[in-house]
Length: 514
Image 1 (cartoon, one colour):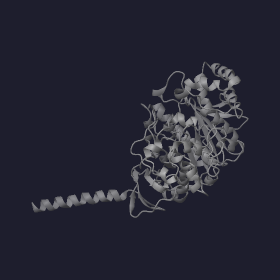
Image 2 (cartoon, helix red, strand yellow):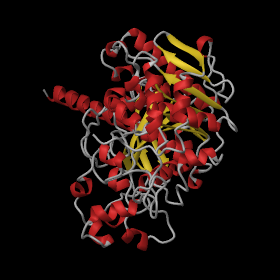
Image 3 (cartoon, rainbow, N blue to C red):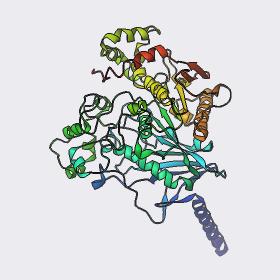
Image 4 (cartoon, rainbow, N blue to C red):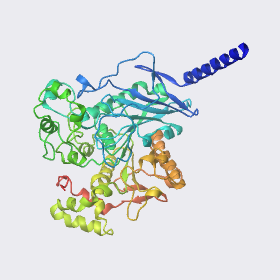
């Protein structure tokens, strides 16, 4: 019995040592603030999650620019996502977030390929959500499939809603000499600075960084392209479904569209709370209260990018018109049917505000088989993407696309690809689709490969139908990613989009009240 006991004890000790060895075998990396332990998957990729890129913006640090994180001792577990930034629930969220929410949310995640002997290109993903919702922890944004194609994928959280985009005279008085209001944009810049300092540790090339964002994340990319503070922090840009035609509010003073400044909106929200310390003591649920997506667009309780004169010296589209953007390769486009499901019924109201031109707009859309509901989609996203592509093509390589592929389970007569429908394909995550088919999986592999080619070389062109010429004002060539694969179209929906373009700058677009 004694021998059997000793044999069992030795077996238990050996098992424990094997377990310890397995834990220790997980990848450990040293960054500028401490050591991290991540997770390796089948020898193909490694991932590190919830890495602090800035100090927690809590207490006295609420509504201040991000500061470097405090260093730590020992090895920090980087195997799980951290909490997402505070936000109110959003009905119909395309890619809902698991897990917790906390103001201590300024973390990033990365997926890296197995070492290849040369630095890998880096893609930094900025999520959308109207600057009020979203986060980096959605399974749709998992970067493992992109890492298997040879890139390092970085995703990040940034402050949202009033936590991220808020102005008040009390803050302007105390924050002399530093940027104010665009705290969420400052977070994105801090994350890019972290990438420059640390990405080589994970095999990434700090000299080959591609910014990629969708919706408000795409507008963030456009804003970073015109931000002096972001110059040199990235080398290529991907702008998906960003919009960008509606003038941004100003931090203070008159806004371009005549609406209230962000300071005026902040003062109205704060009410009798007039001191910075009082505002920083407000419970999080009160900071989130009394705003929704429509109110945000109508600028009644706006939480949005603002022209602050420092991080964002002007409206991105206006600065593109002046040629003031970073002259880097640009991949830009929209889905074919961006927001029809959500806002299509408001198309008639939207057209009506343009007075004498309303009849011409209605005729242009009804001439395409009563496609009037698609007007808001074109107004908000499709035409702005084309306009930005045309402006940028004058001085840098630009590749314009229309994402028209609809997953087989979601196909309906008369409808195209909806807002954010492209994300599972860009990330090659067809598991995020409803009942993905072999055709869906094949398209996801092709789309993600084109985006990866762009990250490697600044050119998404590939074999066969993926031969993708650069966009120019004369040819206006767009790659349509359609149901049966990609194909080239010259001047896609040109007459309709030209008519929308003619509305600017003489008409100031406002959100139609219901």
